[in-house]
Length: 169
Image (tube, rainbow, N blue to C red):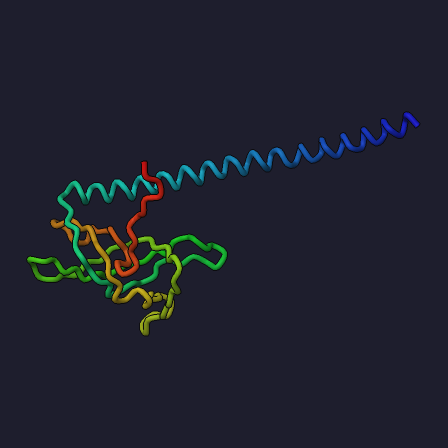
């Protein structure tokens, strides 16, 4: 009877040791990969914020505009729900005291709660236009010395809700 208990103990111990030999390295590799992805994401966000800050430091102007063209450069797959579209936008900006002008820039957009309508162009069916964005009212911060350096301050002005205060002290 004593031999059976030791046999079971050795078998279970062997399974546990075998599982640890395979599982622990997988967990270590997954953790390292996650840290690497986090670092890359943080670096990308810092780069984007530095670009935006350089526009503000150069005397950036905040103006109303309207989307007149939205060409999709990258669209996430169905499995990548929540990842951004990368889009080349053409915006018509209408300053108060000067004539309207057009600017082009690339932006990442995560559609929240509305349908995206993509339509191929006649000249190139692989370059799709995001026609659901045409006419959307936006607020754009742009560099007055180089209007192609711009970014969205508020995207979709019609559906914009300012942040609400949850706690009041």
